[in-house]
Image (tube, rainbow, N blue to C red; front, side, top):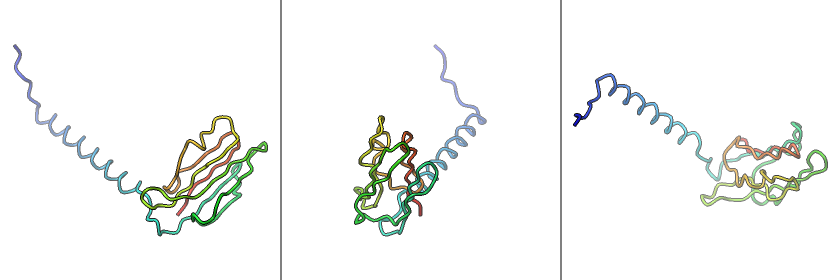
Length: 127
């Protein structure tokens, strides 16, 4: 039978360094990827073909925003609250073939886009 191999001092230091780096990365993303509080004022920006067509404050009382995309297509966006009370943006309707924009779901984080490539529509929340 073989005896269990022990780690050298250098290997132990390497493992500690890897653990510290991973812990730092997890902490960074946990602190920087949390949603903003529900009472913080934020803005919705929607662009078609790189040209801004809607710029407004984020609030659930605004109803729906209907955007005409390239080639006559359209997308419908609504603002709603998530389970934590944060207001976000969702694409509820689109007449594109793949519906990736609809399947993106509710976006509450700043600069996380909702994209409809066939219509060249991009919607995002900014601080």
